[in-house]
Length: 448
Image 1 (cartoon, helix red, strand yellow):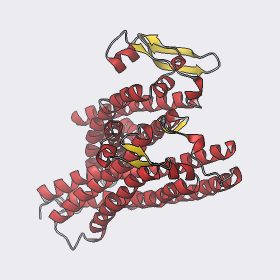
Image 2 (spheres, rainbow, N blue to C red):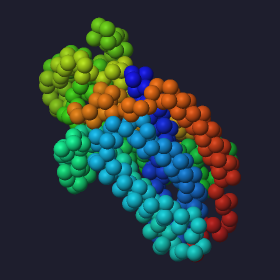
Image 3 (cartoon, rainbow, N blue to C red):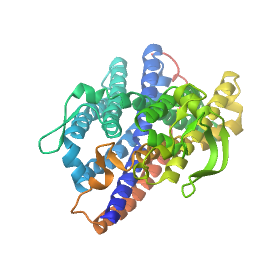
Image 4 (cartoon, helix red, strand yellow):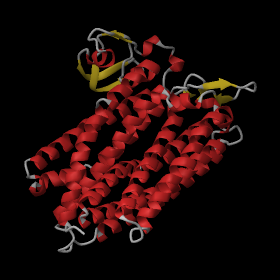
């Protein structure tokens, strides 16, 4: 069953990683759509109405692919992770059901109003629909993250007579201390993704000399929102998320920081390669005592290394975990620098003429996607060998009747299917961008 476990994990990793490419964009755009609809409502300016309409179309495209790719994830709980579902289904079923019944239908219903009710409903109702779309999108993220937070830090449960876990307190489940910072960090990262996509499209249109009024609005909004969100993504949300890892999962913290040995006044590694055989870091570049300071606000605090824990409790792929974390942190710093530079040029009135900076914004679009993927790899690789931290090992959660050949077959099938879906999404997105927003008419920026 060892190879079946490997393929089950790979399949869930592939499908969840591909799926999350879409929700992170929709959750980020949802907030920006509220802003555009608010400007439209307050100014009664058709320009913002058309801007909101164009980005609602992009939201809808990403939303549709998110739905299609999200459905297989929940089915895998039954097909590939039957023991886990039997053991913890009484808990994760609650939050997953709430996401579907409350958040998804709220989101999809009001998206329908924005897509098909433009000529039937007033500006006020369209603003309300955008607000409900935002609420539904972020509620969806909250319930999904509540599921993951419980797997990272189990709370509010009781053990039934047959050994299954049941919810002891729904309020406790939804206010898991792990969830608060995880949600804040995740959603600011989603706003960063949405802002980078918006700014990049504005840069593309300016460089190609098309839709200039729209392009400038996209750039202004994307750069300002991206600069704010990228800072918040690092501090306080990223910083506090890392601190709670050291509080609740110190083994994960030691592993992704490459701290093999317990140290007083522990350094932070900027660059280096983990050597698991010798339990050392090759070619290290460090900031002295910075880890102790950031985690415990004390330059000389003692930070537990991996040597403080039994080796069978260590994550099973420390190098990949280490690199995932450092890629996430490094790209996060780059995102702040890019948006900070763009914000400075915007403030000085030179952004729309700075071709080199417009190219930089446009070429930076993959970075937030890579950073969020690396962040989720850090979260999930670091939880190993646990499926439910401290309660259920990953190896004990797979389906006993699904063997390696079955799991490999479906993994190959998903790889082929998602390659097709990815190409289809890129084609449809390219067509949407090529067609562009409505051309500005002389009366477009006047009031009704």
